[in-house]
Amino acid sequence: MTMPAPASQAAPANIWSTLARAVLLGFLLCLGILVIYPLLWMALSGFKTNSQIFSAPFDLPTGFSWANYVAAWNQGVRSFLFSSIVVTAASAACTVLISAWTAYGLTRTRMPAKPVITALILGGMMLSPTVALIPLVRMMQSIGLYNTHWALIILYTAFRIPFTTFLIRAYMLELPSDLDEAARMDGASDGQIFWRIMLPLCRPIIVSSVILHILFAWNEYLFAMIFTSDLDVQTLPVGLTSLMAKHGTNYAQVFAAMTISALPIVILFFLMQRYFIRGLTEGIGK
Amino acid sequence: MEAFRQTQGGAASRGGATDMQGPSPARRLFDKLLSLRWVLLAVIIVSGFIYIPIVENFRVSMTNRDIFTGEVSNVGLANYQRLLDDPVVWRALLNNTFYALISIVFQVFCAFILAAIIEGLRSRRARNFWRAVYFIPSAISTTVTGLLFYFIYQPDVGLMDAALSFLGLEQFSHPWLALESTAIFGIIAMSQWQGFGYSTLLFSIAIQKIPRELYDAATMDGAGPVRQLFSITFPMAREMSGLMIIVTITGAFQVFNEVMVMTGGGPSNSSQVLGTWLYQQAFILNDFGYGAAIAAIIFAVTMLTGIAQVWYTRKRRVQL
Figure: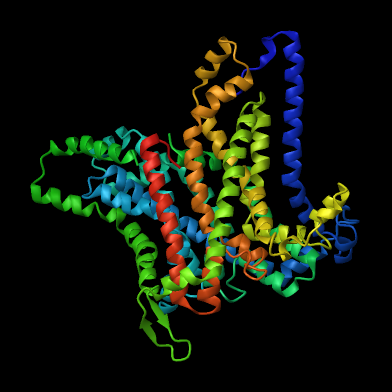
C-alpha cells in the first residue's frame, strides 16, 4: 500500500519531496526513540547497582552482572512466572476450544433461536469486568475458588469467550461449506466434522486467537489482583507490585523483575506478529 | 452485526440438503434441540460469570452492610444518592473524561495521521518495522509500564527531570505524580505512550483495505501524496475513526491498572478514576453496596458507548 512515489514529477518537486521524506523519517525516528528508550533504560538499569541508578541514570551499566536478575528471580519472580504460565496456558486452551466449539454450532448447525444465542454470547464483549467484580468476589469465595489459579482461569475464559467466538465465527462464516457438506453426505457426524475438518481449516484464526488471548491473560491485572492474595498464586503483574512493596527501595532489582516479566511477551509478539495482525484484521471486519 | 443475516441465510440453504432425505418432524425437532449442545457450555459460562454477576451488582448496590454486626439491609437508592454528594465521584468522572479526551487526540487523530505516514512509506520492510516498533509498549503489561513511568517521573532518579535539565528546562522539573495538579496527567501521558502504537496498527490495517485503484487513479490525475492523503485516505478511513472514538471512550471509563500502580488514586484522591474509587470503597473500606453503585456508573457509560457502537457498526458497516 505504498503511496505512489512522486519520482515522475519535475526536478524542483523532487527536491521538496526528498526533503519532506527526510523530515518524515526524522519524525518516525524520534518517535521510535521515545518509545524504545524507556524500555531499554529499564532493561539496562537491571544490570546496574542501586547507587549507579541514582548517580548516573543515563549511563550504560559498567558491567553486565546478572546479580539483580538472579536476586529478582529468587525473590519470587520464579513463582510469579510459573503462575502466569499456568493461568495463561490453561485459560487459552479453554477459551479457544470452547469458542471454536461454539462458533461451529453458530455457523454449521440449524439450532433454534440462533440470533438470540449469538447476540447473548457476542454481547458479552461489551460488558466491563469492573461491573461484575463485586458479585464475582462473593461467588468465588462461596465456591471456595478464591485465591486459587482456578479463579483466574475461569474468569479469563468467561470474559474472553465472547471476543474469541466472534473471531472464529467470522472466519467460519467465510469458509465455504462444501467440504463439511461433502463429509456430512458421507455420513460423518458433527463431532467428526468439527475435529477433523473445521478445526484444521480454522488453524490460522485459532493461532491468532491463542496469541490474542495470551497477550490478554499475561498482562491482566484487575482480576489477578482481586482474586489472589498469596504470593505463590500471584501472577507476574500482581507479583511485581508485591515485589515493589517489599523491595521498593532496591530499584535495580525491581527493574530486573520488570524486564523478566516483559521479555516473554515481546519475544512472542515478534515471533508471531503475522498471526497477531491477522487476528486484529479479522477483528476489525470487512 | 451484519453477519447475523449471513448466518441465517447460510443455515437455511444448508438445511435444504438434509430436508430431501425427509426425516420425521419429531426427529428433526430432536436434532434441532440436540444441536444446542454446541453452545450450551458457552451460554452457561457467559451467563454465570458475566450476565448474572452484572445483574447481581444492581441488587448489591441497593443494600448496605453494617460493618459491626455484618447485617445486610435494603437501603433502596440511598447509595445512588450518596454518589451525587460524593466530591470524589465527580473528580473521578472528570478524570475519566480527561482520559477519554486526551486519548481521542493521541490514539485516534494522531495515530490515524501516523498510520497514514507509515503506510505511505515505499519500502514494505520499513512499514512493518515502524508498526512493530511502535506497538511494543502495547504488548507489555500495564503494571510494568506503570511502574516504569513511576520511576521515570521520580524527581531524584527519573528520566523525565534528567531529560528536562538536559534540554535546559529545569524550571519545569516536577514531582509529577506527587502533585495534585499533575498526577492524573502524568498517568494519562504514560497511557498515550503505551497505547498509540496499538491504534496506529489498527488504522494501518484499515488503510490497507482501501482499494489500491483509487490511488492509481489519483496519480493518473496528477494528485500528489499530500493531496491523496486528504482526498482518499482520510475520507475512506473516517468510519474507522468514528468507531475508534467510541472504543476509546469505553476504554477510558474502564481504566484501572495504571492509576492503581502509579498513584493508587492519590495524592488526596486527585487522580481517582471510577475503577479505583470502586476498589477503594468495596475492597479497602468493605462498603460493597457503595462500590456496586459506583460500578453502576461504569455500567451506564459502557452501555451507552456499547449501544453507540452497535448502531454505528450497522450504519457504517465497519466492525471492531
